[in-house]
Image (cartoon, rainbow, N blue to C red; front, side, top):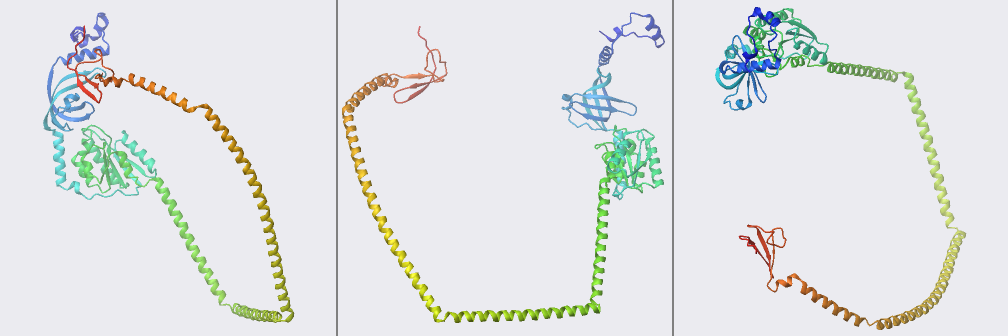
Length: 510
């Protein structure tokens, strides 16, 4: 089926009339229309197109756009073709594409399927940016003093579009980290031909207002062309000469604009820029205020304690200078001396009484009656020891006599037991003799020797001694003509060893 077979070519003015009157018109589904259109476009054959890569994404396949001053076209290069490229495609690179037009049937999107890619050179826009960057760098625009972003920021100016996601991301990040930071929006266009002038106007207004501690200029991610306004020469010079610390936050991490080199700080994303201006979070502020409050309270308490100690010292010094206190001190000292004298006299009297008692005791020891009493006590002690010794000797003799009687009784009992055991042993010997065990053992030995001779005759190894052998296959089974194959190894068991052989021929008997 061809495209012309189902599509009626009519004049624009006849569309309404034809659709009403011609009931034979073929109505196509969307998928049929896209499929037929794709076939028609493919019939155009291959085309070679030259342009500049403006967007590039690599997954399994390579997805990119090529453009010139007026138009752009989506392209795709299959993985097998992309892997054979001898250079690395990059945004801004001018290339020559040879491919076939196609329509993606799922979305109806037109694409150029690239079968070959050749490198032509840097694109015009990329080359202009490179030359501009070298020019500004040679003039020292990028080498101006880079200021640090203030740690404490009260007001931050944001130069961006009021309709994009950038302002929302910055407001949300600042609100989460430190909602005390005030945000002033300076509206500007962020893409298109009018964007550079709009951005410069907003920056100029922020400088004139002079109410911001930090400025953020930037936008969200986009294509290479969308980011070009932030590489405008006049805007880059204004950013470099801005008297207020300024952060450039253009696109995402890989995106680079010339304002990134001219600004005091380059942020990978607008969210990162919001993080820069809120280095001190509200949690840190609360903690800092709490710490300062505690330090102030501690300082006040320390000063108050010092004053109290000084007052107590002055009161003590005032009391020490009072005449009444002087008299009281002397009275206390006099009373202490009186008590000390009384204590010394009492100790002296006590020591003399103890010494008198000791002398009386010594004197009483040398009296005649005392000596007689001491000797009498010693005699009584010796008599008691003598009586104790006599009792011990008598007890030992009695115990010895009881031991001899016990020994005699045990000897008699042991003699009787030995006699009984001898009678039992004699009876056991007679019983054993009557059993004739030697004759029974001799007959059993003869039977054993006969059985052993039979086993020897039945032993397979005994057959080997007569010149026979046993052959096993690789599975260690007895080899037969049915379980062996050519090339297998056989193990042959002989009398004193074994032989390993390989089968080279098999001959079966009829």
